[in-house]
Length: 128
Image (tube, rainbow, N blue to C red; front, top):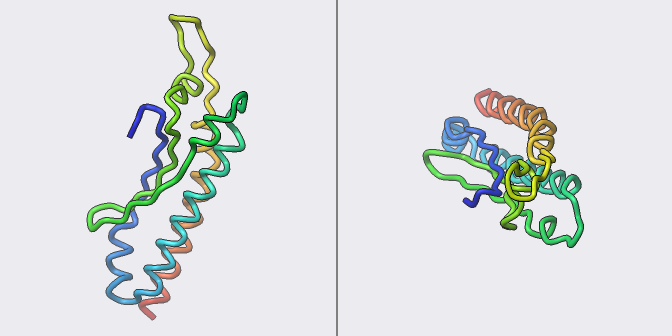
């Protein structure tokens, strides 16, 4: 990942592995929920970043990674100046921090908790 990337890492691995054995459809639903969370994060970040030329906004994307060890959702910007826009710069041509990424993460955190609760409920239903 580049320095402009934003990553939100939520560990659903144990839940997904268990659901896959007990109820494969529930595991697919958890994967879809995580993908939806990434899409929501991408759209939210796009709505918050400045848009002089639109390059940064167009470079924002999302991804998911599901392996045996980790379940991950990430939102990323491939534009090289995203880091400077977000964190600012003190030396060469000072630029104040805008904190778009942090503000987006503050909004996404409660959404991730809601998705986790839904996944837990789904897992409990699978064991009934």
